[in-house]
Length: 335
Picture 1: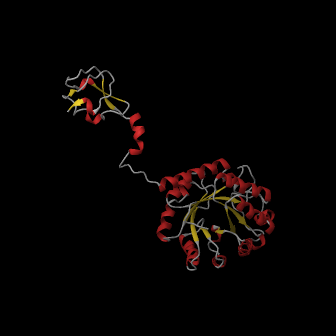
Picture 2: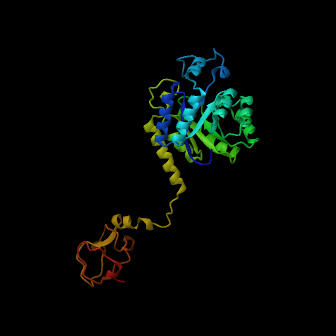
Picture 3: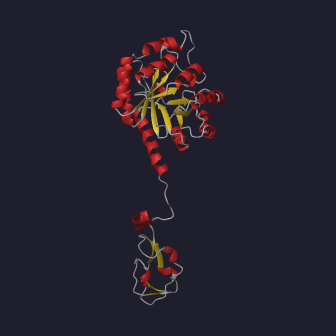
């Protein structure tokens, strides 16, 4: 995976609720919106969590252990999802939440791993992932800079193909906590490391701002409907919103790559003739008559003598008879 190219990633999360058909429909819909990659989560309950682990405040509908167990896909289903992504020309990413999940995805042949922010301090996990020789995206999420740096050094020391995303683990994220400034900090701290932004805020404004700050990997949660079950659906983008984001980021990329040269306006010559003004006669001016200010007006189109010459022609005589609304040209004046 080339992290130096712009990529918009649709985070499907667990919104499929364990339905293979729903997950495939989400991949197809995301691809139709114009995303470059889709991301899922790979949970193996018994390897990831104890049974009575606390639940996050934003989702308490069912215990995490049972939820992950119920919604997990088997290998054949994962292969079908990967094939669906390939058929729809989007890259396939997953976040493994255990060492066992890393091995499962390696067997699958995953295109890219994304480190969930909760795994930033899981050193055995990170070392195992660094040895896998597969592209990795690190999400800063809930980690401190010290914890994040310890994580990044594991990948950098092994020359891994690694990218780093600013992310705030708040669902939804208040604009005050988005942390666009962290992207600038990452640019200074990790020169040469491709940067991204995993956006949990509402709307597209933060993602667009992050892209302009050179965060070329943009991730947003995606759902077919905000009314779907699970922890992520209500804060995810529906297809029309994701399409708008994709169009906005791609248009911004084009704009940033094509600076406009204002030293010349030749490309607007036709428009200038239509909308700019010329000096015109607003009364009859017989040939040989000295031109006075009250004889002149300034009207469209801009095909005659530019208005900046209005003082210079005063006192000079007309070469020909000029009538009301005649556009005055340079050759009409005895200079």
